[in-house]
Length: 440
Image (cartoon, rainbow, N blue to C red):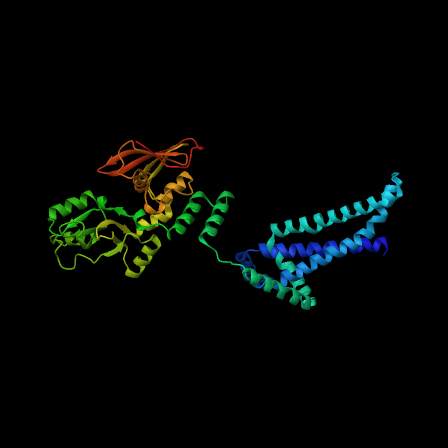
């Protein structure tokens, strides 16, 4: 074969190898969401790429056959194309003829190999990774043509591959399910790239957490519930409304754990405007209240609100004792976070670069996010920062009690009637052992 013909053949083989490399990586890296967008825009080739992703056997089989065939031909042609030229060059440099022939073959091999690595492998794969969907829709049709031409060979190797995959227990199709972790990872990447603002990133994380956060992390605690007793006088009801203006009030009989229902403040106002006495025993004034267990997630709570056509619920524990109340606004505030929370209601206040003042009722996911922690010990046993301290200390914390964990010191600053109000979290030695150390 003439040198010119050999060089042209090598160029053709390099082009084919580059095509196979781009076809392999671009289809594997193509995102289904982006392909669907291309399909909606009228590019039917996107559907062919998605079909390949669903049934990749024939496609990748023909690519592997092509790549290996090209590699073998390149070795045969390359040695004959460049060895004489390299030998002659070495002769001109004064190298012994026998040595120049041997080293000419080595240099020819290195040159052909380098060309294939650079032009037929690295550059095409980089292009396939940089714009996978664009490349995939352009190469999928040529690859399907090759699959048709070499169909008998493809069928044979595909069946052998299917047999080996079955014996090894490997899946036949890739799993394209998008998990919450995938969404969080994409949101994090978007925030780091500047595509998402910090508040928008936070909202996405909060929405995903609705399936894991319990209602107790967003409720109004038992000690803060403003409620009426059935026998309360009109003077007492008026005074309590003036002191604690709310849209809804719980009504109980004898104690907060004996819930009768709730009364809407607009109905009380209507009685005042009509010069009627305010009596909780008036017929039709008390509404039936939605009662839910304290182990519901916020996502389940939203479903309960939707099915019951209510926006207010009482949360009880396994002993039927009231632990708090929750409204649909509480759930929405959890989702929106700092976008709607007034500054005076912030539960986490960053004092400086290495310290935070945190409310004891703050939900653990919020604490972990603020401190950039991946996990806390015995995390399934508590929902709030106060619960974390109780579990770690194995008793009711007192003022100045502290726990050290993973480079942070959690110190109780204020306790009110056994309730932890404020906790000072300080960053200590980052190299400290990640074992809890209760400090008296």
